[in-house]
Image (cartoon, rainbow, N blue to C red):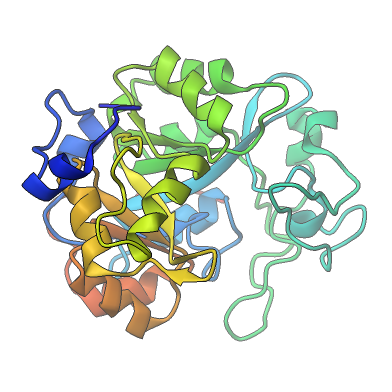
Length: 314
């Protein structure tokens, strides 16, 4: 149920969840889930197989893993957050490089200028520091993985797949990998870019698609007006920040109205245990965190839907 306008009256009456939901949404358990941001970026080198392996370990067992995607020079979907490799591999401008924002790129060595073999020759753990300030994975062969490698290495894991690259579009490339591996029902697609989200929804009508930035801004009015959200679009899930334009979105009314429109709600990125508990108490469907270990320690056993641990060599 996408891009459907919900009137204030409908929100007041309570909207029934949409029928024919994507498999990812149907799977969501009744408890609050732990979503490992970039695989759990404070526990392992972000967006790598090693990080995802850690997120699956007993005592953590993140039900969902979020990863980011770009396209290599030879047309492979690769898993990395920034448009450049500098910040995670130490090449170019080095480890001190700032993280990309939506509008700014700070590194020099572009992902799209390198082939998969060139990307995987780099050390994806070179800049990672663990919680004690150590570098336990540097020089251990940790690579920038392809999306295909991630989905095949972890066949039971649910993923939030964030399409970072917008120009040129990589939607066809991403969908080709996911559908080829039969992973559509365990994947939900996220693109804060409006046009990329529209393209995903158009080309994958049966897939789980998250709300783009414009929809998040619309629903954020719930924090200002008692019945905000009237006339806002609805996608399959709402993946939203804790604040927007200075307004705290972690409100019961906000969560309830989004749920009434048929959308599960996920807050990002939460690393403080008290904030984790606060959003869990609101009845959210999940929170995104760099510390899935803290999330699991707070929530206890993952229950239904916990992924099976998958041993990998790197």
